[in-house]
Image (cartoon, rainbow, N blue to C red; front, side):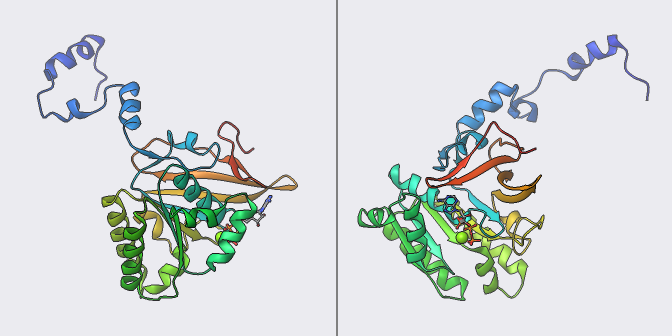
Amino acid sequence: MAEPSPEERKKAPTEAGPALPGDSALQQPKSIIQLMENYSKIERAQMGIPGMDDLVAGGLPRGSLVLLSGACGTGKTTFAMQFLYQGAQMGEPGVFISLEEQPETIMRNASLFGLDFYDLIRKKMFAIRYFELYDFDKLKNNLDEIIDEMKARRVVIASSSILGLFFEDKYKFRKALLELGKAFRQRNITSLLISEVPEGSETLSTFGVEEFAADGVITLHYAKVGNVFMRSLSIRKMRDTIHSMKIHPLQITAHGIYVYPTEEIF
Ligand SMILES: Nc1ncnc2c1ncn2[C@@H]1O[C@H](COP(=O)(O)OP(=O)(O)OP(=O)(O)O)[C@@H](O)[C@H]1O
Ligand SMILES: [Mg+2]
């Protein structure tokens, strides 16, 4: 087809006529500023990791279920504990569901970063439960109970690697995760689902289905750059918000995890 002439180009908008009510063009954001305003209306849950909220326009969209994936020792548990601690500081009770590690170990490790979860338990701002259940419905009932009791606004489940074992096949697991995500969204609970991935693997989750059911995916990396290992983080997806597409350096220090939003990994 021939290119339209400059005259034809000028005519085109008027010939198409003005947009009518109900026309999808009217519902589309008109400019980048309007787009930013729309995103800014979304309620955010600040993560409690310095630098992290800057990567997602101010925090995780509330009510979303976010997969936090990474190989061993990449900082998944520390990240999740900082997220819950931040919530508690803001008056949002949090619940940690552990299917593997003992609560005492998790809390003791967190205390090494200066996060006093024992105090939060006393203040009824935090609860941690270890379940040795291989039945999703039972787990869900227990989870509902503790969420109601605590009036929880944040939940962490560790980990999808164990949760997935409850199901005969990965499609049933995916369906259950979708239901879980829906239940959290209805209650405006922001949640993290920890997922372990094999060292050096490019996969986003243990079973390869979690990332589709989740609203967002944050991946923690540990990679060799030159002759040193560097920690980094990226956001693979995050529904309802704009987010950084870069790989950002991350550090674990005696005070926990820091993310460097303006620096890049070379
Ligand atoms: N004080 C500290 N300073 C620097 N790095 C630390 C400090 N304490 C712990 N780390 C690092 O944090 C890592 C553990 O982080 P974390 O337990 O959150 O990772 P994880 O991804 O949950 O690990 P796992 O796969 O074992 O569950 C340790 O392997 C260590 O490298
Ligand atoms: Mg861990």
